[in-house]
Image (cartoon, rainbow, N blue to C red):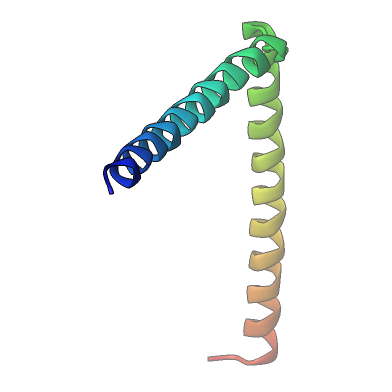
Amino acid sequence: MASNVVKEKKSAKDFFAKIGRAISGFFKGIGSELKKVTWVTGKELFRSTVSVLVVCLVIGALIFGIDTLLKYLVDFVRPI
């Protein structure tokens, strides 16, 4: 009976040790992958940000123009 209790404690220890090694390996893997990342420079980040803002403004202006044109067409066809 005592040997069963010892085995249960040992298996629980092994379980938690295995989990601890897995978690440790996971975070070591994250660290090694982050070292492989090519990080952008400040200049590249600024250029990309400006490009995105310009494209957003152009698309917004196009949508605004189409919406306004359609509003005037609907008002012309169906006067209030």
